[in-house]
Image 1 (cartoon, one colour):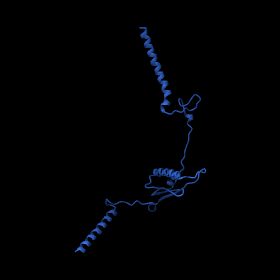
Image 2 (cartoon, rainbow, N blue to C red):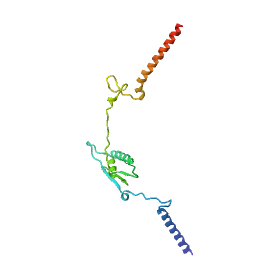
Image 3 (tube, rainbow, N blue to C red):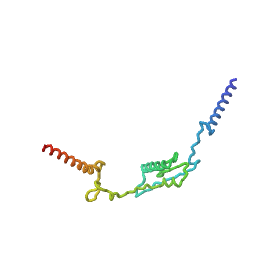
Image 4 (cartoon, one colour):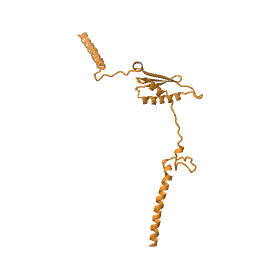
Length: 175
């Protein structure tokens, strides 16, 4: 009797385990989840970037950390899910992008060199931002830029109102 009970419990455990496995694998069931496919199964792009000396400066670990954070910002702009970006000894950065539909575009964005563009805007400056010789004047706050203009207007208003006050006070003195 005991053996029969043990075998029945074992059979129920096996049936329950099989039922649970089926529930997880049947696409219509609420417990079903699709497996996240990685670079090897889904395809994608793997880029290995090699740091090089620039003007005699050997890249340090902190330089590579900065480069990794820049690459993460660029790749997050692509909308890639779960990108893997890591440093690899001695001076490499490995980037793996699973499921990238356009590897050429992703490689172009990752490999882009940052461009710093400078524009000369001094020719477009007008008063009060320039002095009488045409040299730019540095202001630390927006108020400092607007104060001379506002001072001209307020002094113009003040001079009109002071004229009115003078006229009214002179008429009172006369009367």
